[in-house]
Image (cartoon, rainbow, N blue to C red; front, side):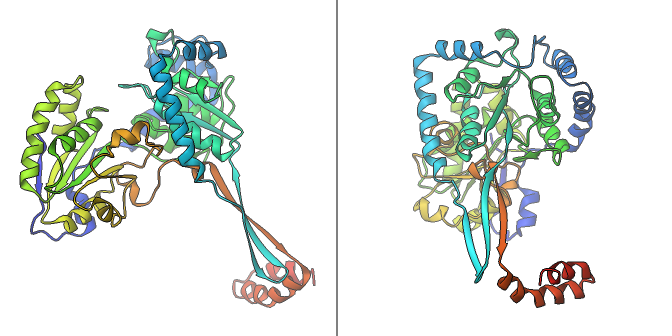
Length: 431
């Protein structure tokens, strides 16, 4: 079912590997051209534009952008007890993990009488986007809101696409998750128009300082377009999983995990990297069996047989590590002997899942980790969503006269070599 890429006997550079390895093709530039007029319309006409775009694209007539608080309360009251318990546990675990990410202010004495501090301050207002296309993601409410709250962000707003079957509101599970987390500013707006609403403000929604959360290619394009008007977390693409496995891995587990991420979207990427032909054959057989038993078999089959997915055969685990580092997966599973040691050698991944009992789906919901992670190889330079996403480091300089006199000759020398004499004069005027 998975296309085969045999790298045994080939010593390739990271650059060459990135051209060979399967990857979802996402043309964000083309999508930017599509969303630009939508975003401009929202900037110019505000709420009326949002409502008209929503009616045209989502085929839903909304009677206002903001979901009334009574609808949030009703959704929480109607939530199945098992789902409420699961969300409460997910929130509790996420809070425990993200609390450890808080940063303390630090002051360094550079010289006697001269200090530089770094103060960490939250952004003032964030817009949190929760997708609602092929699947419903109350878990993404948790992943966005918890780190923002722990960072101390004073103003949070959530947007999620309207659903015709729920009277134009987002899915009730999303509303219930917002209510559980104490978020009462929720908008029934999706797609590029939601990003523009956050960026420029529209109707009841004031503009934000930062937008976070995953979405489809049009959401990603709108975030790219508005970068600079607002901050963004990342340009998220379709989900992806890589599994580095040897002969000790259980092929049933590997197949199930590849399928679990393929379930998201026909464009999702599932990649197996192994040095065992026997395991590869067993996983291919398991995929054939397990896909037929799943609810979304057509979607999963499309993802697994697409050019973005594949099985990579390597000579040994050392070569496998070079491959997964070049791929820089959003989710990376290590199912090998001595998996923790192997995982410690990985440089590039959004999140790493170690051993037979740490599947990616655990991280999607209830491990305590965050599932908003870099895709498309961006894990080579970017991190997943965390408390730090919502904080800014501010350097604070405080020198007394003596400390300034000691630094003055160096300031004057450097301002002279850069031909910026007023810089030096700003120091000598004080002495």
